[in-house]
Image (tube, rainbow, N blue to C red; front, side, top):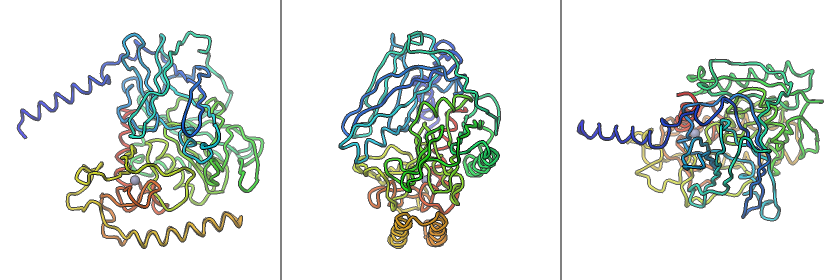
Length: 475
Ligand SMILES: [Zn+2]
């Protein structure tokens, strides 16, 4: 390549950066220093969805970047843009996923309507703006599904700050929120007498995250804020074993009828609690031993604190929430139906490998690694499916959690040994079996925390994706 060509490419790149608006948007022209939380209802069934505005609230000081207002990563099933209604120029955008988006692919949505309360957060606009919400179509291209003018002075807008009276403290404060990734940690199912335990759980799990790369190296780019929301009693709702409970954040196992799927559907209560501190990402720690968790991109991640595998669950679910990483596993049952694998998935860490010469993460792959990359899939599958059968039986027999933890321990020991002996372990390639699909979808390494509970390590593609998100909030 000549110098001339290099210069031309650099200039084109610079122009593109300016053209997509990143360098051009004057934060102070468009926005105040506060956060607008736009609440709405997202309703529909398997074949249709509708949106209705609830209200616009002041969610406290804006903690996101004031320079990186456009989301160039474009992850998530949904995406929203805030634009100037006069010129159409986009002044803020973000990708996200939602509980509705997951629910829509469950069998229930075939016969019933569902409605979910959701929030979009962006800097408080100085004048009327236009909101456009997009969803990916069958080819994964974003198409507009809702547009609405939003007036910060309308009757549905409330600029008053909500004082929820909750106790808050900083676990990690590394600098101004506008230059850091801000995480809020909430707890559910902790009674007043358990708040010391909550603080210990926050410390233990947060340290697990920051002992895992790339969070470990980028620790100084994060602030972690903790909110205390004591419950009347200990534990949260567990409908499958009929252990019912109501807690301030509505956390419950059994979401979409999956016994280990731990979500809270009371978005207003969760958001009101979180608003006590500046945040872009949210983690909800649940005072339970029963294995469970959940993670939704740009909404929140959850984890049962006392399970023997809580360290793994915490980091795995944060991967979903923070960087929209796909599950790389495929042998355990999930609540939703399989995606159409004739289309390339939008998630950064799985691929349908339609063009092996142009692998999605080619820049991280050595030219000597064959694509697709061979691995001992049959032996792994035989063992893993056997474990899944035993797992179902343990739940059906209502055995104590200790029995499940022993099964997972046995699984981990055997899988670790199997994977460590495989020829291409440690190499980045394209290994078949990912995203709930034993065939047709590929992951980047033999092992990753998005694939197994074996090691507290993200594969290099997941690490790279996480770094890109960190950069979008800090650079
Ligand atoms: Zn991975």
